[in-house]
Amino acid sequence: MFDPTEFRLEFPILKRRVHNQKLVYFDNAATTQKPACLLATMREAYNHYNANIHRGVHLLSQESTEHYEQARLTVANYLNAPDPRSVIFTSGATGAINMAATCIAETFLKEGDAILVSEMEHHSNLVSWQLVAQRHKLRIVKWSINDQARLDLEVLPSLLQQNVKVVAVTHVSNVTGVINPIEQIAQIVHQHNAILFVDGAQGVKHYPIDVQALGADFYAFSSHKIYGPLGVGVLWGKYDIMQQFTPWQGGGEMVGRVSFEGTTYAELPFRLEAGTPPYVEAIGLASALAFYRTLNDEYPNEIGTHEALLLQKTYDAVQELGGVVYGYSPANVAILSFNFPNVHHYDLGTLLDQMGIAVRTGTHCAEPFMNRFGITGTVRASFALYNTIEEVEYFTTSLSRALEMLS
Image (cartoon, helix red, strand yellow):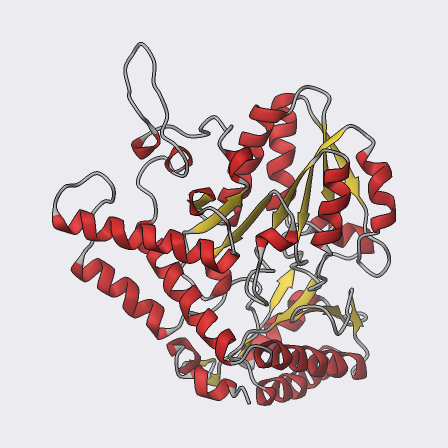
């Protein structure tokens, strides 16, 4: 059986206290904590072979380059990507979305074309497309969610008939944990000759990702959501699409030959990795993925079952205390957003913090979702493999105390 207490020792921050209370970290949808193996890997990189990659003939540069390109292979294997050249390291999911939106618009779209974006998106997967729509005189079409905070696949074909060339949708809602049926969406989108872009920021850490099985054309995620370092993310795309891209940024390794008469560009992946990439962070991401994959290989179903149990028990507690939960289903990933009548989410989050519990409050960068339900925000509890049933029980007691104080 999977025992989270065994692996909590791998995460040094979980030993600290907050406001004289033992830390209970339920803000994993915002960022995950980092295992000791990741910290050791990055420390070794800085202490033993730190040098700028690809350009140097000296040993440190060669060693750093080798580790960086091995990290690309690790990511490709984790995603079951058929070609590692289509794995592009970025500054994060937001950087990946902006890169994809810019390159897709400049390469494939023309004035009057439309981009379909769902109502449950994180701002990164809406505003980025809005920006390119403004620059290229494109249209944004909204794919609404229903009262259960889910997308209706039956309306998708009619929406696509509005000259939609790109569909941008999240794999997993960062507000509710709802999992979108990407495989089915991909089939419908491709029947209408459109491109499917998937924001995988929340999907990547809850179960193995197979981009070939999903059928999407692009998949993006951030390292820090899956126990990796900040400052690095990944854009994966189908090679035959990406090789048509004109570089969206200039400088560094993305060039072939440079002159005032004209410049040629490198092949993928270097064409889309301008400047000095976050090579130490990419190496750290590979370490985090190896750590997580090892756990999933050892406990192929138990981690998901454990996180589902945490979600269920938290949902039951919130319901029993009279809370309003948005979009809950036992099939969701381990994210729960809720409110209580006549209690502001910020006040509740502040009191829970005083009890040592870290939850997220506010709009969660998803204002269209909040507008859909007529609310200003929620309290969000989100879980990871190191959270425990005992923490949920303490959360339940603390939540009840906080509600009494605010009543």
